Amino acid sequence: MSPRAHNPSARWTWCGRCEHRGYLTRGDAKAVRKRHHGEKGMAVFPCPHTEGLFHVGHRPDALSSGEIDRGLLRHQAVQAAAGRWSS
Image (tube, rainbow, N blue to C red; front, side, top):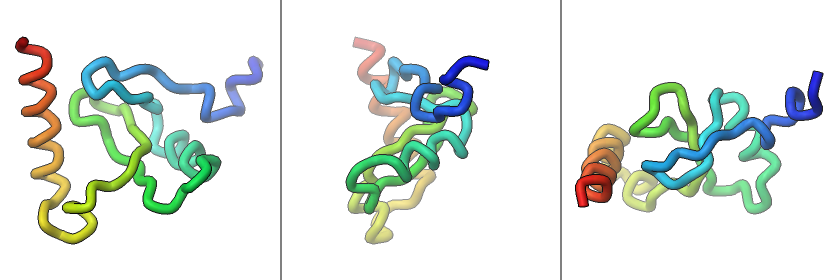
């Protein structure tokens, strides 16, 4: 078995639409988040474009404060990506 098999941070793929690393399981993304310096405020969230892909990043302030919900956040990400890819 290769060394990558036991290292979640080595098992990622690039999401060209989000322009972020994507992890194939939520568990891998959580393991990477725990190893990340400055873990506080980092969230694991599903990619809005690719089914079964998960990203690690900072939660938007508006999401944390309750101004928007995850459904609206996903809709905004899809709309932003659609605009980026149509031009």
